[in-house]
Length: 166
Image (cartoon, rainbow, N blue to C red; front, side, top):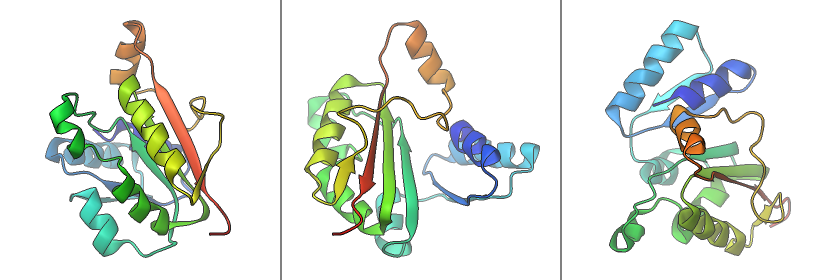
């Protein structure tokens, strides 16, 4: 719903952020937060992230990418719909500057394991942790995440950097 994006952008006004969201209520809520908090370093594209990445983002132009709590598509027959898969990551890595990062977070252990496998298998990326990273200070806890923690659910953060030399 844009809460994390607004919180991160407000805390770092010196950095520009591009939010990609297909969910209309999420875009609307983020626009409301931008207005209410007078945040001026966020731009929003309401479109599919795969297509935006393919058609609108130049290679080696991103300092970092946040993918927080993507839809886990719980049923095995739907796993092919998950965002974080090797073909997507191969394209995403090209858009990162050398030294740029991918930070993913999920509250589904099985998806966390898949993300770790996918990111670890990308030759151009290196893990910043032995496996899962501690939650970076810049990533705020979401309401959904706080509820999950109260219920005893785990949360897994993964932070990988693009190698300087490809």
